[in-house]
Length: 130
Image (cartoon, rainbow, N blue to C red; front, side, top):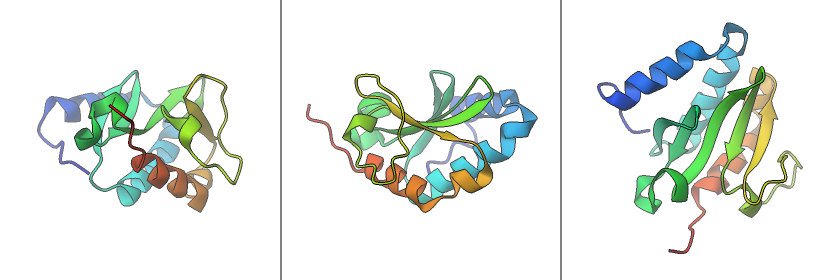
C-alpha cells in the first residue's frame, strides 16, 4: 500500500474514517486490512465519499480501480467499479448498474471471507483497453 502518512490523501482518509459510525468502524478496518494484504501496492484515497483503492500504473483512480469501501445507509459495502467483469462463483456480487457491482459487508467475519480477498485480487488484475 502506498505510504500516505504525510499528504493530503492521508488527511482525507482520516476524515473519512472519523465520519464512519462507531458501530461500523471495525468492519471498515477489517476490509482495509484485507485490501492491504491482498494488494499491497494499491494506493488508498478518498473518492466519491468512500475509500478508493487503485493501481495508478493501470490508469488512475477509475481505469485502475480495484475496489472501494463505502458506508451507505448504515451498511458497509465493498464496491467494484468494474464488477461486471469479475467471476463470482460464490454469488456475492449485487447490483444492476452498467458495470458496478458491490458486496454488502455486515460483520468483521464477512470482511475476512476468502471469497472477498479473491474478488479484490481478481479486480486488481483487470486491464481495460485504452
